[in-house]
Amino acid sequence: MRARLSLRAAALGYLALLLVFPLGMVFWRTFQHGLGPVWGAATAPDALHALWLTVLIALIAVPANTVFGVVCALVIVRGRFQGKTFLNALVDLPFALSPVVVGLSLYLVYARTGWLGGWLLGHGIAVIFALPGMILATIFVSLPFVVREVVPVLREIGTEQEQAAWTLGASPLAAFRRVTLPAIRWGITYGVVLTTARAIGEFGAVSVVSGNIAGRTETLTLHVQERFQSFDLTGAYTASVELALLALLTLLVMTVIRKEGPRVDSDSPGDEALR
Amino acid sequence: MPLGRGFTSAYLGFIVLLPLAAVLWRSTQGGADGFWNAVSSPAAVASLKLTFVASLIVVAINATAGTLIAWVLVRDSFRGKSIVNALIDLPFALPTIVAGLTLLALYGPRGPFGINVAYTRVAIVLALLFVTLPFVVRSVQPVLLELDQEMEEAAASLGARPWAIFRRIILPNLAPAILSGCALAFARSVGEFGSVVLISGNIPFKTEVASVHIFGQIESDDVSGAAAVSVVLLATSLVALIVFDAFRRWRFGHEG
Image 1 (cartoon, each protein chain N blue to C red):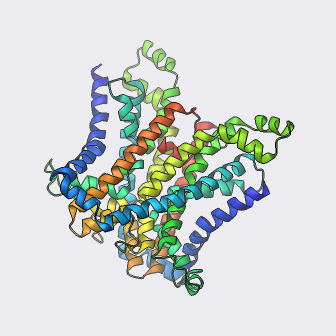
Image 2: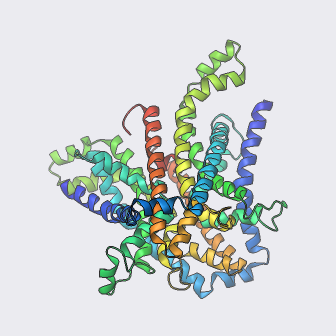
Image 3: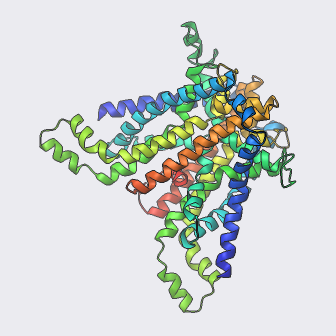
């Protein structure tokens, strides 16, 4: 019994020192001078613009990766072709890459001297130090989540029901929409939550390609760093609390889905950690 | 189906493959000498060494602490356990820059405990421990949950002590899960940027990790140098993923 209690104390103590105290500290530091300064920092034009930009990028990146994720999962589970192993591995790669390397890779393609950048700039399209680059970076880093959540569910349900629908005269599209899609909806939902959290929180990759121009190409995470480096701690803490609240909301949704949705063991690297 | 395959290939090719090819291509532009010079420059070597050593320390701590936490979450029962369980995923939901600021608030100058590790190597390990916490826990938890306790009971009835039971029965069963979690934690540590950038101070030769080094090279317009060091990180990520996959196959005994 004593061994059990001391193990529990060690585990909880580790979590408290590493997770709970630091998080509590940020909330305390943010609100220690009352609500007035926090409200002022949260409603400053640059802060509002950063929040809007973060939401806008997520609104584009998340649907793109959701559509891709479902199609890619179908291809991985149902398809038989050469190079499937390669495709499978390629999907996992963004999990293991440094965000700075992701940013650099986009820079090398889309900067003025890059493979496509010169041509695009000639046609009036700026990607680096502009919104398109930030969207591409966010899509890159959050790409695997939906795929990795949908693949195990698809594998589990098989194709029998869908084939039955075909036999009864349903078109492939109708069969997918009325039979398969409802069966994988929890997997998709879970993947979308994870993709959104990653998209909102991305820092390194976006930092490389955005140029960090306050009020123009600054997302909320970049705003935290910029305020911190300008010695405006209230501004940095306020933006951090906004992001932390979004993170806590994510945890809540994840917990609810885990309770409500059917449990299917996933097999992805990211998922090992994300479940 | 051919349509879906075409779309998938085009999307992955455009988003992932084309940019990564550009990194490889750029790193070879100065020839083998240029690549070697960039990778073996004193600052690059120092940052890579720091990154690998810190990541190995972090992985070792995670193997122990992660297994312990998973054990407590599965075998122990206490009030508020489900909240603790949900909290494990916090490092994944919380943006890395916030994680860094958060640790700085507690373990930096003017922290409430009087501990100040800001701008030291300890701070880097701390930040990496924060962001990699869930990997081993979430990898070990399901295996522990399914582990048959009869073997342990049999061993106990034959007079084995708790420590012997853990070492000879539980640990061998958990090993693949612990190691695959470690592989992912290592890959994540090696590339980590956001959580480290505020708390480490980024002092060259002292607290500058590889990703911060690359970032600095991009800012000072040494893009070829940045690409060369990136290739080293890229290769490390690939190896970590391959190792992870090997452990996963060992554990499940089939193709994942």
